Image (cartoon, rainbow, N blue to C red; front, side):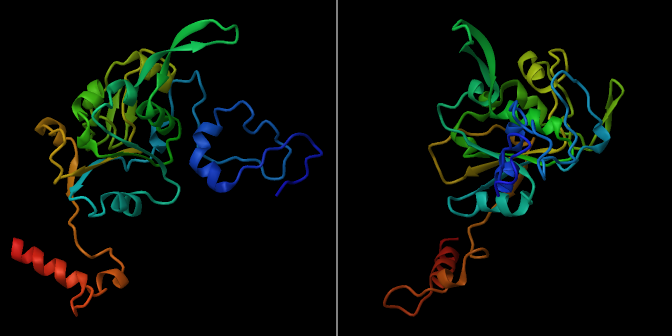
Length: 277
């Protein structure tokens, strides 16, 4: 649909693209510059503009949680997150930990930037955690989900660094400096100038995980080439075992017979597992 462009320049964005990349589109200077189009891209979600440090916390979604799904490869950990926790309209970011993944990759780092005058300056470039933290804070009524695949293939406590403290979430509303935070907000805030500047536009603001941001991790239990997760790290997550069974397997596959036998794969696997146990 090209629409009538006689009134000025128009940008047509497909709904699925808007849903997935809305937070980034809003940062473009051209976003919604033309307000005379038939259906301007707008929603009712409160947005905190750059330069503002506060938002009405009473309207914030309070379904945030930390869940670590573990089990053998192929048991459906990622499938479970997608189908049980990520309802339509949820903003989802996914990343994968690996042995070379660092805190700088996760949180952000100081990098050289070339300005319009070809001069090199050094600026903080936010990582995926800081980006989704900012978007979740500024869009309080939307649900945000950060999925960390293979969380134990990297040194998770080192990758989280001081953000590790934020994983403790409140179980009841808490008032700090006159602001009441919903259940699911970080119990304790941390001081991090770079994150605070990016999220709140205020370097002195305490950093919290908002209650509308959930973090999910997947972990293989049968892979020996991984880092161990210490007890202090694990206790900040709800641990959920995903069993390797046929509950979510199509019947055409589970009931398929093994070549030259009258035995289905489902019967074969369940019988062998009973013998092993």
